Image 1: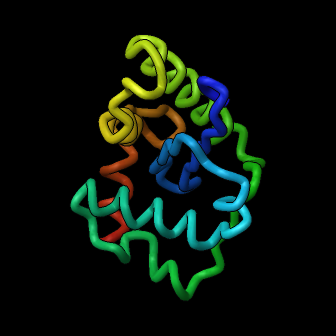
Image 2: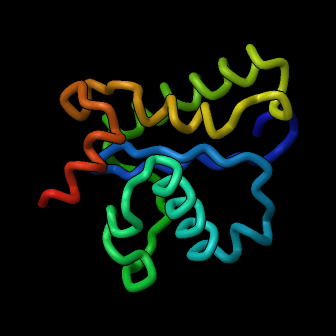
Length: 128
């Protein structure tokens, strides 16, 4: 929770492609598939990556789960700390450049994935 608002931090475990979303409502969380696929689609467009980067999300099962991978969990904790720091520097959530924050999360290198930025790992999925 940031500024008394529910926030969501999503991370693709293979690439660490991350999305931070503020003001998530309980009703939006009940429609998990729509929320998640909408957020992924929006952020892929912002990164100028094809909608199919992570496969056909309409045909795949979308799982929202706690990770059991400690390296992913560590990276997510670091990203959550980064989000808190950026929001505090901006003054509050309303003054935070959320698209810029999301973009920076995907350009941060992580040792868990060979020091490669998540946006590059996501783009590599297209070549496979």
